[in-house]
Length: 346
Image 1 (tube, rainbow, N blue to C red):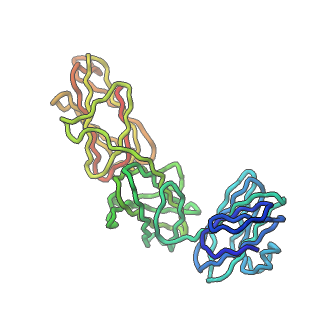
Image 2: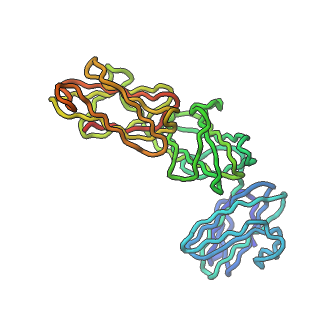
Image 3: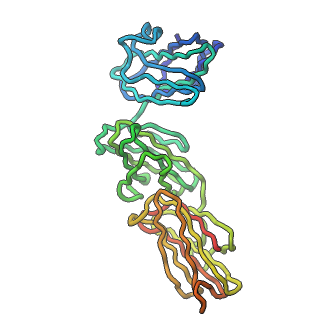
């Protein structure tokens, strides 16, 4: 039996014995290995990973753990994996500070299994591009704050899901824990529905409340720059059929672009993107000018999905055609809308 005194460790089972390492453990197993943990009372995530059939379960008795059965088993701690489902997690509740024994089992002598027990805390520091588990009392009232530090400006794709599919809600706050994303936003458990928010370099807090005791939160990050001039006189030139991608920041962030149209022709502005807030909560507003003449404005209210808008520019005696001359495009975020957008001229 190997002992572990840390709260969040991983281990790898193999045929050859090796020395214990604080971050990863290697063991010699003959279909069964017992690992001892010193755990405090609280909530934990037990994770098992393997390409072959293996299973694990937590006990308070070493002898039961060696036998793989017994009355000392921790409720709902059984987890199994196989060649089809290679990674599984299980939420476990530890009711007292004590020594616990993880029984790891496989059908063969040569099965490699990675196991980890991670403590679930209320709040903490959120690491970019990594999954973190958080806890709540499940009443959707108590708020947990997760600190997020950005060394660069860019796009954060926040994803929040209750462990059992229950509802959770999210806000993005500044360094003083004041919301910069408006009211609470529903966080569906579908991981494809990420909330893309554009943020400058700095320190933020992600506020969470949930109907779940345990939820997962992710913050994939991609470095992205805000493009375009800050005013009309410094507008950035666009080239036809070439797409540019820009960060969209909150609070009326404005970018100017321009295009020198060489002749009367059909001209369309295509805008795609994704924003943290959509609909009446905010979005992106596009205003088009022919020189000093305002041709009109339209709004882009995407929230979850990347959706496209096509704006046909009419400024001639022919419907759908633009005269020769310089056209300006003012892109402004309104209310709490932010994220990213792409622009191209067709």
